[in-house]
Length: 146
Image 1 (cartoon, one colour):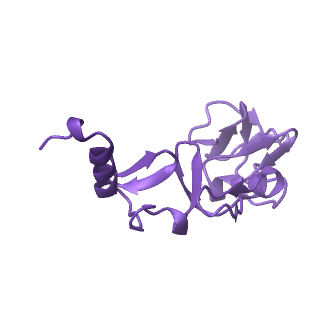
Image 2 (cartoon, one colour; image 1 turned 45 degrees about the vertical axis):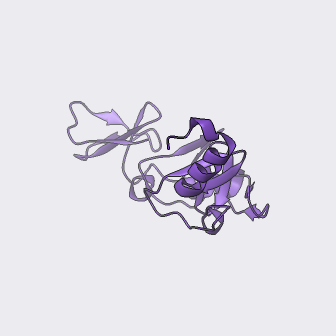
Image 3 (cartoon, rainbow, N blue to C red; image 1 turned 30 degrees about the horizontal axis):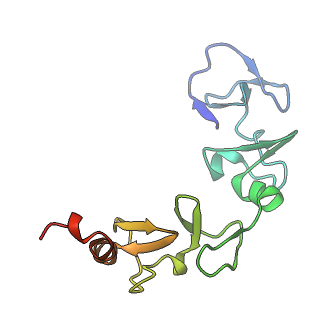
């Protein structure tokens, strides 16, 4: 999104207000220079550099992530419970599958995964390492070491 440049080598004009940027700090986004106060979300009017280091562009609208999702984001569906996932809710992903955080657990034993835990996706089911290894050893007994 916006890079903060701390040195102004020549006078540049702000993309929003067209006034010269005389401050020590200016933003560079969308191949243009901006005053810090001029690069704002079109919808909520918050200064984008205070919210995030990303912006979202849709037509002529410059948006923060929250408003982009609010205006254009579609709700998803949890791959386990098949209930809607609101656009701003945190989710877990495994390939093309999306899960509510509460639904992201081993579908055999119910173990809820923590950050850093290994999990396996087998035929659209999320499995812990122990259950995956048990399943594979039963399906392919000759391939498993004794």
